[in-house]
Image (cartoon, rainbow, N blue to C red):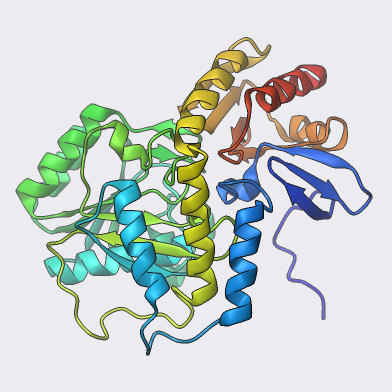
Length: 373
């Protein structure tokens, strides 16, 4: 048996990491400006994280959600304090797609409606309803196309208000900073108007913070830059620094019903230990503030890079739009300059480094980018 070949891979095997650096099987060191797709939040192999996960594994790796798990309670309390959502509830799952899937289900249960509004260029995951709410028909199979989701242009408040006025919308789901969509930012006016319209017409507002949340934008959640409070917030990626985990922050107006939601692996002991260690490091090392400061500095440096049409983003979620295809640029960054970056579409270089990125490492990246260009 061989692997199902669905990933375009660089011919590199990463075997070791520390902070914002990784090493391949040949001993070469790379600067990681991709963070394993925004997953590595506190840096690779942080000593506190390694110790906490190892200690938990020695005690208990897993038991199901049929018994009490005080680590889940601790995580809910800590996450509530860190994010400012201490009056919300937490449902833990294993991935971002599952988080969005369950958020959309909760919205439908809560409203009794089935329509969903999503933004053009959105990416919300690859499971059944999450992929239907993703604006990419190539990855939605026929079985995923139920017709429940309507796509509207990001920041076109009038279009969203018109659909919400019909009175049949269960939920609006939006990324305040679109990742796969090209680091496109929702405006404060759009998000505040969307909040008002959802409240007026009885629809649930879901903020997908899977990529832009957990401190990456320079606030704990990206929507907090815009002074809005969604009904549901979905998280994953940076929550456990590489251990598979996701969650839904659920507003106090939602009633829990036994059996309505469930998961086998979600919120297991190892995952919770990892997530608690992440919050320890984020708080003790002031990584949200670091993301804001170093991200602002890096964007200023990148504004002078030749060939870049636009630099956009917030914190350490940055997109560099070029006039032409960046495939060769990314290849040369990996093989010649030993830097990992991401992409969005064909011409946007996407930067999603660990939140511990330093100014010196930001300068190092800019220098390596200049060498390639």
